[in-house]
Length: 192
Image (cartoon, rainbow, N blue to C red; front, side):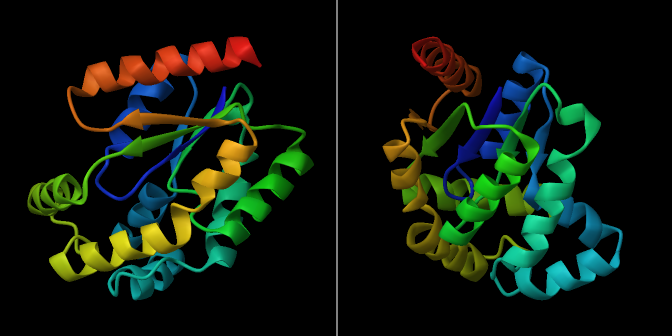
């Protein structure tokens, strides 16, 4: 199973990616987690990424594409993977298409989680307090949501045209949301 999990910041992508990874026994790959690990450990990549994320900006495509390409080529992805937080713009969709063609792979589905802006703001404020994330200030959150609406939300149309999009309400019981995703994925895979 090769999946993208998409949606605005705070919608629960990381939580659902982890549950789906366990269910399908495949790795969940979060570009955000990769960057946060490098930032925490003050690697050259982390220092470069921090210069963007602290301002609410996205890390440049060239850096993100390289990280994703390297990660998808690792041995643990042979039976599938879940990408969380990538692609975020049209250029990254093209880069992912090229990576998959090079690897001889294809996407099985794109799961889009949805929630209202008020829910997202509340969740991210809570996450900032619990995790002490420097990239979850009210100003940065607002900028990231605007960037998502402008650059990432339109990508859902691309995947809908390709017949890969599965939309799920990201509000409610975490396990119930996960079960809905799994049911829709299983039905989608059987149909294709």
